[in-house]
Length: 115
Ligand code: FES
Image (tube, rainbow, N blue to C red; front, side, top):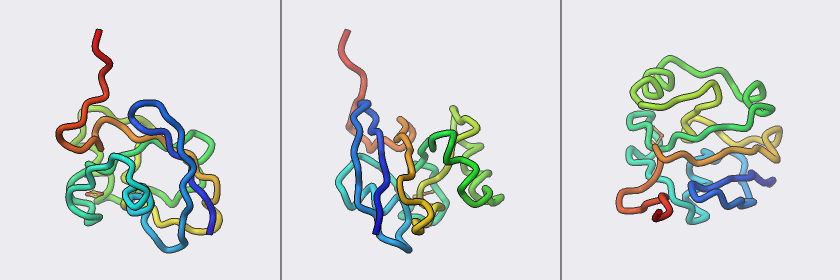
């Protein structure tokens, strides 16, 4: 057990209990935060995209080709973009910090604040 720290698309911070062996996408979804994750973790949709905090980027396993291909299909990616279904939570990731992006927003949910 451990925690991951997630900033949602509205900018709110959440500390989520994490279970070893679970995909980070599943942990986020299990706690009810908005994440589309349309393909259910098959690395086939990119709607589980997150941005990890820079200090954590090096601690994750390298991006595999199939993850990279899916990230390339998104309009906006950064050096810290990952697919959360491809990150398996392990003890050494206790405290992992990441941010949910608009690419992972479920249909029908808007983040924009009305002007
Ligand atoms: S849930 Fe579809 S790529 Fe991660």
